[in-house]
Length: 513
Image (tube, rainbow, N blue to C red):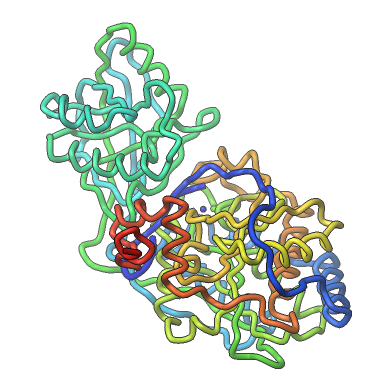
């Protein structure tokens, strides 16, 4: 998951890592009843049974994680994962299995990153490059470290940029961090451009200036929305960074050697989403998307981000197929690529299927790590809380599952929210995800098979219930209503800031005058 960060309409990208609010149900009621009717209830019971007996969800994850490994979009490993996804969907017996190609503006490959303190002591440091950033000159650089307060970036860029030439910048928040992580992320991109223009040699600062979580860990990721920054940017292990900060706070001059080497293409690279279907028996033209993202980062094998989402998607498809029941509407299983660079695959999906988006009913996505599903976030669709609550209550065997209408733009639900659909994020209780995601410990051993099977079954039940209801759960909101919802929640400014707001003046006060 963009916890990740952060893309949308015709160009762009989202990779955000917003804090998750509590899952209290709130908001409007819906006119239609939602308790499963008798026929659908029997079908759901069959799906639940198939999902919990002789499931292969863990095997899917083990193959993807161990046999393929890290899958950076546009890389040979990512291409191998796409082939693997096609093979798995075919072996399960899904219909219309195919890939849907799309292109990313440029490709990127990690080569190496090394750092050491030269003075006031000498010791090796642990660093890794962020994605889609530049390199130092061959052989690296040696320079003094200058601290930059990420809570005062406007002032830093105005007052201190003249002092950045030839320096390594350490980006650290002084005092409380900005609670708006989206704003912080956008501002950090402006800072990186300013730092490069000012002649800084490199930046230590992780994604948006965040310190690495955990012991002896770094966290890679992107620092822009489908964007390459020419300046090298690294994540440094928290213990190492804190020592440098202590030296600086005591007035000591810290001098580093830093060598960061990456490779970036000068032309677009190919990728593709993987698609397979269970065709509906009564309304095959109406589509429910169920999916997760197939790409990952490369410091480890991408098991929790988002191998879990891939394996639960395949496990959900297997459960429905094994149950022998057929939904009224088509369930389309999609393994998106390019999520980590800004939801690029899901944006491509909504563009490729633009003409049939009116026939889409909902999207269901899992991308919050290795923990159990504890909530259904409806992507702004407060009108659906009541019916979905009634359904969620029927899942009591899987624990309490809350329902709210929160938006989640930190994963592939984002483009479907912009399309006016209920884009349902399967929210999870994953406390260890902050350590595993984008790190060297994003590995298969951090996932429990029982939770993986449980989540695949919940995903299957949510997707099947929407697909098999006698009445259609939802139709896409018109653009005006979606825009107003986003404006009311003050989420429009961020989309405008990154150039992907698709609604013009819709939803604004000016439009309403």
